[in-house]
Amino acid sequence: MTTLTPTAPHGRSELLALSGLLVRLHRPALILWVAFVLVMSALLWAVGGPLADASASAWADYEACTSQRCAYDQDAIILYRDAYTYTTLALLAVPAVVAAWAGSSLVGRELESGTARLAWTLGVSPSRWLAAKLALPAAAVAAGTGLLAVFHRLAWSTGQGRIGSAKSWYSTATYYANGPVVVALALAGLAFGALVGLLWRRSLAALGTAPLGLLLLWGGLHLVTPHLWPSVTRNSSPAEFLPGAGINVDQGVVDSSGGRHEFVSGCGQIYDVAPCRAAYDKLDAVGFYHDYHPASHFWPLQLVSTALLLAVAALFALAAFRLLRHRTASTRPEVRTAA
Amino acid sequence: MTNTAMEAVELGKKFGRRGTWGLRDCTFRLPAGCVCAVVGPNGAGKSTLLSLAAGLEAPTEGALHALGEQPGAVRARVGYVAQDKPLYPQLTVAETLRTGAGLNPARWDADAAEQIVAGGDLDPRSRVRSLSGGQRTRVALALALAKRPELLLLDEPMADLDPLARHELMGLLMTRAAEHGTTVVMSSHVVAELDDVCDHLLLLRDGSVRLDGGTDDLLQSHTVAIGPADAADQPDPHTVVESRRTGRQLTALLRAEAPVPEGWRSEQPSLEELVLAYLRAPQTPAPSAPAETQEAAV
Image (cartoon, rainbow over all chains, first blue to last red):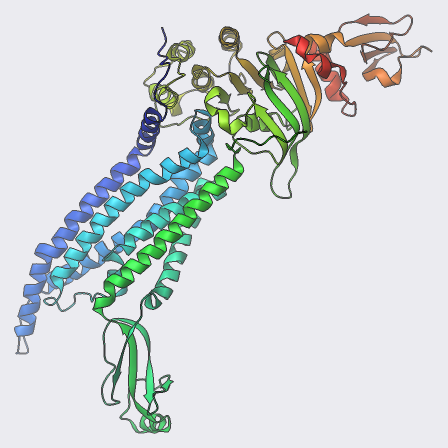
């Protein structure tokens, strides 16, 4: 008595078995991820709800105060600020942690221990094996990180305008945690981790290099972000401070013919001091200029960055597939030579 | 080409960009249905050959076909057990077998798997990481055999087993192989282990094929000649594969076409003698005769 099914539908049941195997193998990671998303969601709800309310009322007390000695709930202000900062940092840590996990646990360990070869000889082609290893975690990572980014944005927005220490939209950590960029970073981390795991074939080596590479990618993104969308320019008279608040692109001195110069070193925006005034007059300065991204550029910048990162992630994944195909035997039907 | 289970033409595999050749210029053909022993010293290229045949690595040069196809195209029809018997340590034995069944829905033979595992006094609920080496071997063999492979590649399969289990599993393996007409290619550096089961021999040394053919043909085409070392009538040196001197007596392995000198005693070599002679004499070119007669061994 055997369980041989003569014409079992090839594909669906195998796919199910492969998915089942992946979920079973990475059950601890999955549980940890779900727990992280739940805890973070609760914390972000608290940050945007009760903690923000307490902090806002403390700030209201503080700002209503006119005398020397005032009573306001300083602890509420500090608690809100810390909770916001740490939840933001925890969310921003996700891409690097995903890269480390993908490099070590998801791919590197399987190649190191030989279980990848077991899977490939159990009827799963290497390409399918990698496709499953990228697709399922990508779904979990995108869903979880996306949810947290939405909650983060909600938590952030409730503090705007009523909490003195609330972060502006262009504060670096807040900018990255408030939109789809953090999701794209996590996906790029997954693809890069898988590539590094395949390259090193060692769990520990991939654990070290994958987050490092992701941080370099992030650094590169941070450098190009101001140039991903046309900036807005505002000028001011020398008497005023630099106008416009947002993501900075360029700033300096404008002369009467519209030419741009760097700030005179040691003076910056200070005009009304004798040596600076002399220096700026020598440049024929009529004011300062500021190229920057106002708040309305948040979405264009986020979306262009996200598209860019997704393209990079796709390149990493493509490289991983090609590397694996190059290493293992080709499944293409062979053209036999006449010899 | 359906009567060929595995065929290599000038197969070569280099490790690293400027590294050493694990296999070089290997050309051979294994008839379908044979039980082939791949023998050779450590580092001869046995494992490399088997993992190339399983489609786990790509050759650097030349070609290798398994069941008439590129190895990567016939994964479902090829079973493979690696030397270190990799298994997912966090799965239980039952989960491992269930995974195998799920990934090979059309071919899975649950009975075969259970029979192999049952012999090992294994609790299906125990985790793979808690198994002994021999128990792991059982699970790995069960996975490979339950696929009903047409070609079964086993890399040092019995190394972790005690003699009793080795005998039991080898018997089971051979019965299944005979039932389904499976071609078995098994590597080992212990020739005696394979002596009574294999009917084909592939001897590797330093990454190339030294000897290839049906065991009966190979044994018939060689003679052991024993005679006085100082006799005037010595065997033709061109026909001597390898010779050894013990005191005043010379023992030489000759190719069969060579005449045995007057006054010398001749006997048929055992497989082990043959293998050892070829391993000791690395310069000897492999004879061409077995390659032509290997069809007869089927």
